[in-house]
Image (cartoon, rainbow, N blue to C red; front, side, top):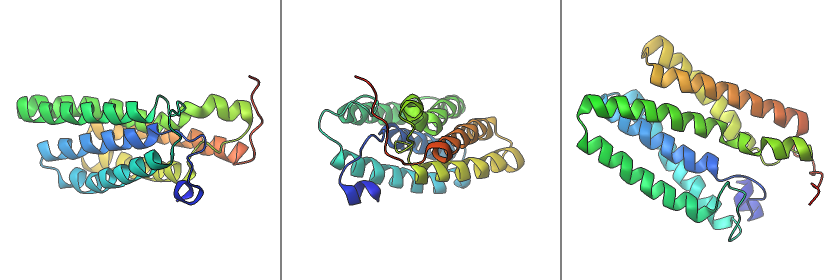
Length: 192
């Protein structure tokens, strides 16, 4: 909402939103392959929300902005390639192999998603401003990680679910600490 209200993304990175799309897609496909509605339903909602956030971000980012990391076009092209790859894997490999592959790839993408706001950590510390860490996204990630860690351990007993979420909980906690320490105060300009 801040991006829509201010009509700018400021110094916020696009990576949390593009990785959210990738992560939710993998979880939906993983859940489909394992016939696990608990994975498909919430991650379908996450996929829709991630697509909305990604689109909103792209509408308000400066042309040629390279702090995302990379550019908006690189994120778009990467997602198109990634989605195509996931759908090919899911439809061409045997079910068991596809489940194993999606599970391991899901761990990697999930950890990237939860740690992606930390891509600005150096700038946050140098400028003493955590404005580039999206607080609502971070809070949602922490809550999400707690819930999926519990479900992954106690209900599903699935390493591919609980491990990346425990790591995500650590990354989200670090982001909350940075947000608490530095807040959204005006950043100190870095020397050029």
